[in-house]
Length: 447
Image (cartoon, rainbow, N blue to C red; front, side):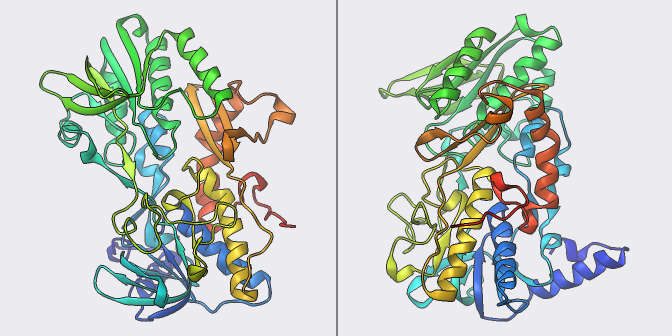
């Protein structure tokens, strides 16, 4: 692994490297809890599960919780919007994955190939079989870069004017392209269907608009939001406010227009309308959000629903099939009908942890339930942000409305939450399992 092969001079870091190397080469084949994926959900819940058993006076042994993930790095993906906006370097938002595991959590640097829930086991891509008492799937989703004809080639071309905040490799190109544009047509897209953080496609648009206004380029650049969805946002209250802001700022928009192909040579983008017809648009700059969907190794597996997501109860996060009652899921890979964000994971993880602990301890789920809470800290310019928070049914669930007023109003305080507070909280608390959503550092008391 990358961290293990770097020269390290600090003694504490050397100890971390040694532990990570040991954990990653573990030959143990049966674990109490197996977590698939070391993203935001996987790291959070692995630590919370271990801590929950310890708090109950029934501590797990070191190594009883294992996380499977072959990635070299762990990323704070909300930071990529900040990178595209010129508010940070992309290296600020990644860490070597091995460095994030405490000694008591085992890390196996392999990916899962197949699930065998009837025998409570998985096989890895190397052919290894690993068994578990309980399984947590937190594997994320698949970004389908090939889902738009010409997109991979356009992203690889430094002069194409096409970029995306949806990957570490491309987010710095967003800043370059926005800064370089002096005049012309700037198009920002959002696909139809499920994506990570559905507010992100317009965050970077608002930041670009603000930069152009403040740099005197606003009159020379026409901005359009080409959205595959029917409205600006899924929650009507916020959607209405954002659409009013769009009109006020002179930003054009087409809804139910889905990007299907890019012709860089002629600077044309083709969009498919809801009625099946297509329309071409000229662009000078285009920020693209690719379509997304379930991961191939989950799609079609015994634990997936017909759409390819891990099929869990939306309140308990436990698998809906009684025979798979020792399986749980959270985050992007799950079937939970809420927006796929890190904020959602902060509320999902404590519920999953409580119910997994209860099932392993008593055979039944606890009283802990998830209400669908999620949040999108929606940047609308430098120094302002609309903090959208809502639950199942797209019903607002605002944490600060009683103190600050309606959160459809844009505030500088919320901007600093996004820019400064949330990244700090993520690296110092969340990945260690010490952040609990709207409850902050205080574990919710489920009654």
